[in-house]
Amino acid sequence: MLQSHVPELAAELAHRLVARAGGGLERVYFTNSGSEGVETAIKFARAHTRRAGLLYAEGGFHGLTCGALSLMSDAYWREGFGPLLAGTQAVPFGDIAALEKQLARKQFAAFIVEPIQAEGGVRVPSPEYLKAAQALCRRYGTLFVLDEVQTGMWRTGTFLAAHGFGVEPDMVVLAKALSGGLVPVGAVLSTAAVSGSVFNSMQRAFVHASTFGENALAMRAGLATMDVLEGESLGARAATLGALLRRHLSDALAPYEMVKCVRGAGLLCGIEFTTPETLRLRVAFEAFRRIHPGMFGQVLVMRLFRDHDMLTQICGNNFMVLKVAPPLVTGERHLEQFVAAVRNVVDLAHNSAGFWGEALGLAWRAVNL
Image (tube, rainbow, N blue to C red):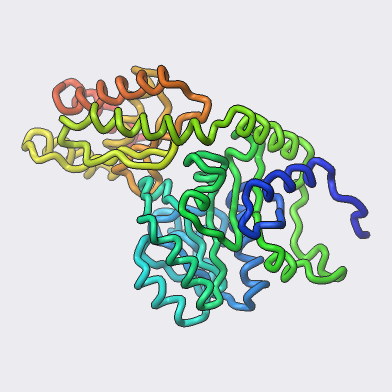
């Protein structure tokens, strides 16, 4: 039986998304999550190009379903779940020469990449990287697909991070913030040509479907989120406050040798730590890394939460980076409190023997759970 209508809320949200996205992204397919969105992008790319291969960037994070997991190189996530999709190939993030070498084989349906690698350590590529990647994909007949699950919805200051880099992808995957983080929802934005390659006849109207993808609660949440983000100009706010946050963090943490750098875009920021040179600090730091590579970062996360009521996270593919992604409605006072809290915890790590003693107890309990 052919469904005789399109849910009105889904149509309205789709219209608003493509109006903001621009760049030829004229079709929207709704999903329940970012992982499902990546799976959808894989299928659409294969249908459009009639190729099976998939290119992805080392250090990326795209989800833990089988197709999405096939686009992640970290053995931690993959172990025990193989065999995964055949024909996938990783290239170093930011390496145009390596990308062209693979694309020139003309075997790949899509190059699927995050414009900024969030779990990879909030890695921001050079301004030229994504433009060059897009041009190469066009040259060799491979779709250019951006996973904007963590960077989209004005997180980096523009509606899509793609806009900040001046690129026009063939597909974009959105999720998470699309409903304000409240309701499971995702969306794949694509060109009309890509969508038409999948749903190209009445007989193929249902070759790809998601039972709850256009459910009314998710669509209403998405519309409400768009209302707030647009009505309160939170993209511009994210750009301004993000720059302020990185500047203040850089100034506050400059005296500490464990802090390598602060980076990011908009209100997606990362604080990277490194092995200290001072012997007494290096011994303690390396001891924690031997317990678990992410143990030092996790101790920072726990101290920030317990002592300062601050929620942070270490990056899933780079344990040396503390990911900082405050709500877009945050204010300067909150940022000042956060900077002071981070400085306090990092200062304790450098100057308090008690910090390492307590941290060792926490680590011991964690590894023996």
